[in-house]
Length: 150
Image (cartoon, rainbow, N blue to C red; front, side):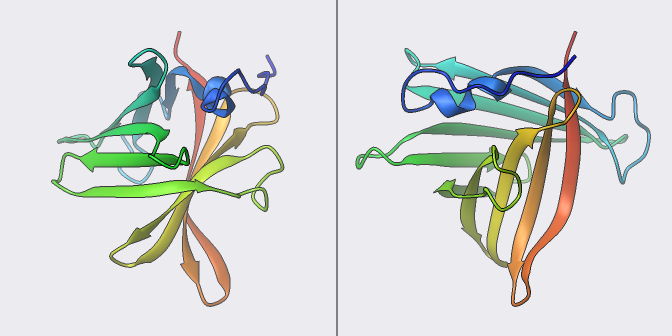
């Protein structure tokens, strides 16, 4: 089933294709490719999107909660908090060099500039990637294929 990648209404409407419950590497025991779930839902009268992520690392889980919404200048941002006590924030960025329909964020991290992006998989679901900026360009270090949870 090919996923329809179509924006919804409003400022946060570009996230409509990824709203819902998603999973990658279902049942994996491989620590290099762990099972991961992503839940994205509109909250607070649709003014924000809550993202809950959980990686099953076998002997423990690594969790993230993030909010996506607008700042006082009406720019789309994210605010992320993780189970290891870290947090980050970033801003909506042009990631169309990854895929013409990609939506993503950039954030200044302790190790430098990083970005994450969501874009449609050619058959089903979506791809989520994380990249770091290097002198030679973007270095991809995470890529996961998510399918809708049933």
